[in-house]
Amino acid sequence: MKPFPDTSPGASGLALREGLLFGRGSPGRRGTDLPAAGVPEAEPAAELPAELLRAEIDGLPELSEPEVVRHFVRLSQWNYAIDSGPYPLGSCTMKYNPKSAEAAARLPGFAAAHPLLPEEDCQGALALGFALERALCEITGLAAATLQPAAGAHGELCGMLMVRAYHVARGNPRKKVLVPDSAHGTNPATATLAGYQAVEIASGPDGVVTPAAIAGALDEDVAALMLTNPNTLGIFERNVREIATLLHEKGALLYNDGANLNALAGVARPGDMGVDVMHINLHKTFGTPHGGGGPGSGPVAVALPLVPFLPVPTIRRAGDGFALDFDRPQSIGRLRTFWGNFGMWVRAYALLREWGPDGLRRAAQLAVLNANYLRQLLSPAYHLPYSAPTLHEVVFSDKLQKAHGVSALDVAKRLIDHGFHPPTIYFPLVVSGALMLEPTETESPETVEALAAALLAIAAEAAEDPAALHAAPTRTLVRRVDEVRAARKPVLRWHPKPR
Ligand SMILES: *Cc1c(COP(=O)(O)O)cnc(C)c1O
Image (tube, rainbow, N blue to C red; front, side, top):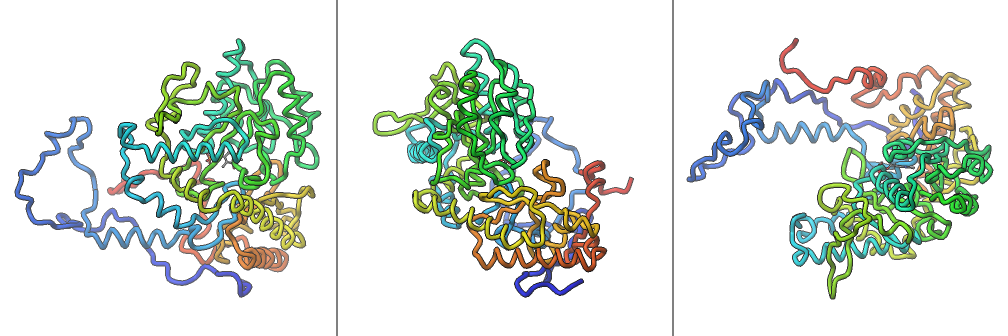
């Protein structure tokens, strides 16, 4: 392997091998050994319904506390996190999550609030929800918002169900939803789930949707266009106002996939561009943690004509305080149990208060600056399929490396050896062999330079020693896995006894 640039953190150091817990321990071994409580022990069989009881659990290991703690700590040390280094996973917006927001979310009044508290006992939580909704309306330029959806895709469903309810209220739900070919896969999926036929729109040669393409597909059966702006190539859809006018003239609505709001927040407002409804990923734009399947939050903001359809309950002012409003006859109903991922609201609100409007604008500007710095540093060695200026993320392709038999996957895997998380690869689908990088505003110029130095070293390695790249990563405990087999024949259950 070629030596790394000095600025590559390089995957090395102490990572301990760790196997499964099954088959370890010994019968009767316990985590904690408390003295007898002096009250009769509850019998699970008497307390729980029979269908929840299992006669025996096959092979469940009995372990001490250190065995369990070390197992999970060792596994966690195999992993890479935003707290260990930059995570340039384009489209996902993996930014550092400030600990001040974590501290706010852990305040006992927030963290321990029970979702069944009566309104008068959770006025603080309602006030926070109300203030966050107002802030999101201000940032998006829209009239009202719901915080209920659990993530971006759930927000899309919420938004498109409102689109349907709006058209139903006007007498015809319509049949089709237009989705550009550069869209995130959730967009056509959402359109389908909401009962529409997704119609693909080809983006123009410079990566943006043209008014002509929309006009060509538009008729009285189109309920909405789902547009991501800036789009998944990181390019601003500069025709958005003209497209909004075309849609509105035909009675259709403009849905904005707002997952990339981090490029615009504090600078420009989708509502001012003619957007009728959009979701916002708090876990992308406002620095609430994500990855690892943790909870997200996908609030949806709407223009005035869609307000009656917001999910119940909404939060409204009541005298000096706040109340939950269930009396909304045109609402699409509830989207989930309880109110939403409240801890995410607290983190996002804390961050907004910490930054203020100027900080928000500066975050968007720095995100764009970092992405463009990376674009500049890498463009001598990586092919840029679109020359249009990009905002918060930049998409390269593996075309130049392909000439040496090196793919986007090989580049991504070698980057792990350098101690960096790989970028998003093979998305968006409109770019063959895509490498999609999003440094976010939280990385310093030195970190962006170090990431670029590693990628430039990999491009040089691709030209000089392509075979070495096919073996990457070589410095990690888990090497290159058989991804096809993992997807086609997943082993989801470990059997303690050999079959
Ligand atoms: C992330 C993303 C989504 C989906 O959001 P989730 O919170 O992951 O459900 C939708 N569209 C775009 C453009 C995205 O980047």
